[in-house]
Length: 79
Image (cartoon, rainbow, N blue to C red; front, side, top):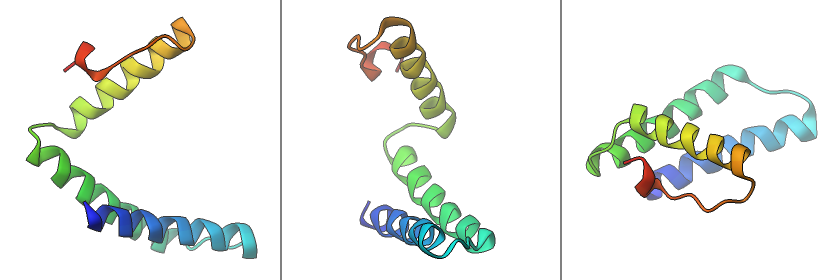
């Protein structure tokens, strides 16, 4: 999980440079986002989850928020 934090930091640095300099190296961004995806996938898999499951949970969570305001919603509802 420390690897994930480091890679997210790399993505943030690229975005910061884009705001500061007005230039984003999309290839470098794609490579760093790929690293983020790798670590996220490994964390999910080691906990018996798939990226598809995470997408479904997130979509359902966001839909519930949109429909019910700040209604409490937990992943227990969908896992």
